[in-house]
Amino acid sequence: MYCRNCGKKLTGAPQICPGCGAKPLVGSSFCPACGAKTSPLAEFCTKCGAGLGERVYGDVSPKSRLAVTLLAWFLGQFGAHRFYLEKWGTAILMLLTLGGLGIWTIIDFIIAVTGNMKDKEGKLIKTW
Image (cartoon, rainbow, N blue to C red; front, side):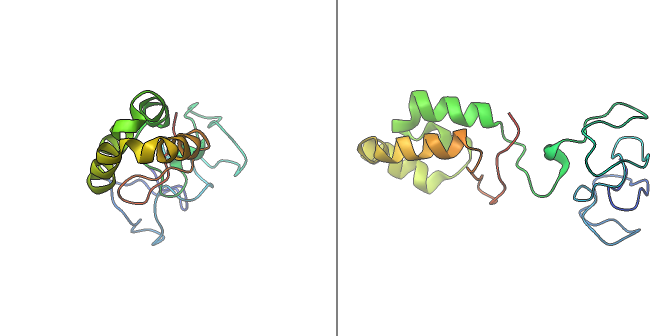
């Protein structure tokens, strides 16, 4: 893995790049797969073909947006999508109130579809 800010090769999965002091996956100047210089607007690395999409920018959850959306639609009244996101307290509340009599379920479904749902760590769930 390479730092997206300075292009330095990283060992392991550090939270902060020792070369530039920034979060390694937040920048847009270098490819995280091969370290080649990239355009900030590029979607793929021209050297290795690795994707440079939004999944590498900022704090994005590894959870699946599709899974959250489908769980909210089909099992939302039981809080299944919140159990998936490990939000235990609100999941149990949804289970006990049947999704706020459906209102809470609809709101959560809309939030999930638009990509504004967050996991237990406050990271946005963007990756389909």
